Image 1 (cartoon, rainbow, N blue to C red):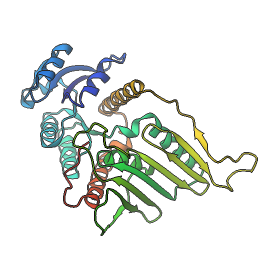
Image 2 (tube, rainbow, N blue to C red; image 1 turned 45 degrees about the horizontal axis):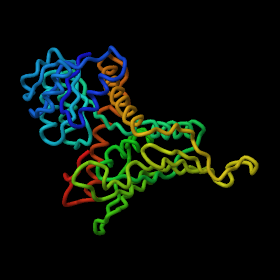
Image 3 (cartoon, rainbow, N blue to C red; image 1 turned 90 degrees about the horizontal axis):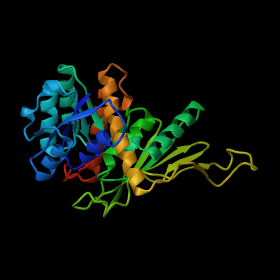
Image 4 (cartoon, one colour; image 1 turned 45 degrees about the vertical axis):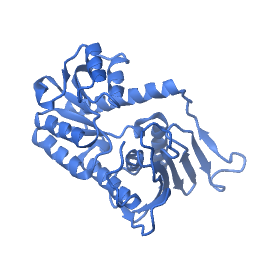
Length: 323
């Protein structure tokens, strides 16, 4: 399939995803950005056309567009491409009004709109989700989730929660009437489940990790123990309750074996996950069942919940949050 890359800042991960792994399913056929020399050099190195205006893109020669452009400019690109009949993989976070507009256009033009939440696809979060599924298959239901995130990771943390729950049905935000805090709790609930979210309620000017103290922490409390994902990249541990195992096999905690990664391995893994996100959209285009976390109801509910939680955290600055 032919892929258009929109944005070359975070979008560089899609360039690496399409070029560094052996695969013949996807080909980059163009780069769209604001016009920087850096972006032009990337297009030249790839040997593909360079565009600064989405209307100049020959949409009939593109199957998928990866849009990694933030703000109104990125949303305008997404909507324009959908109108031209191009399926789009869009970077997060995205607000509910935009998601609903994009989904309506996708349906109207018989194409697909996916959002790349990314972090729930990584190695350790996937192991966490698989362990949750195993517990449910054994008849154990989760009683409470405790999550930690920051303003930039809030959307993807809620995506991780949604995948663990199988959606967001019945989940509501409990209103908070106090003043904003540096590390602020937000409570969510359904009729049978509670969720506590501790969010780092401040961020650095640049998304460089210099003031990032919580990313994706998540614990799931079961009657027979607690499953804890310590951070985005692990470790993952099971803490059995004192009565859940015979004394001779009980341990204070049981690590779920994950292979540690160095920084380069992690970046390569993240690029691979972005290639997988492109592949998931391609599979949907080709008629395979759309993943739950890319279905319209899920995307609309996730973006709406993100906005609702953000309003609890920063009621006067709901838009001051970037991925």
